[in-house]
Each structure stands twice: as structure tokens, then as C-alpha cells.
Length: 107
Image (tube, rainbow, N blue to C red; front, top):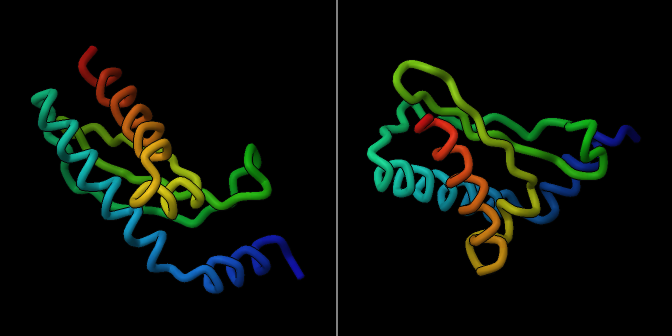
């Protein structure tokens, strides 16, 4: 069995609802934090899961969006998406990652 097949079955077993809830939370947080910085994130979409060689044992997702016509992306591990809805430490880590990206767009 390939690693990809194994993780697809694993994701299905855990339920996609946790990932979908996390993706919604991240999208809402991105819009909120961008708005606080007077940045408008547009055409927001998700890609994934994808195999990331840096994290061969985990699946990653990316949220893609445009700011001023320029494409941007932030990558999240499946674990963070599943946990960010209910775990405050994960929320803080994810928010920090989003804030860093937004700060880089202001320069």
C-alpha cells in the first residue's frame, strides 16, 4: 500500500468534517486578520491534501488567495486544521502563521 493510499484511508477514517471545520476556521481568521491590516484577501480557495517531502508522515493543505492581483499561499498540516477549531494552542500557532504572511504583504 502506498503512503498516499494509507493517508487517504486515514483521513477518511478520522472524518473529513474535522478538516473541513478547520479550513472554515482558517479562512474566517485569514479574512478577519487581513481586514484588521486593511488588506483584502480575494478569491480564497483550498488545495490539498498534498504530499510534502518536508513532512512525509503528514498531509498538508494550502489556502490560496490574491492580494492586489498577486497570488499568495499559506500551507497548513492536516493536524493543525483538525485541531484549530477546539485547541487554543493550535489556534495561536495558526493565527501567528497567518499574521506573519499578512505582515510580509504590507512591505
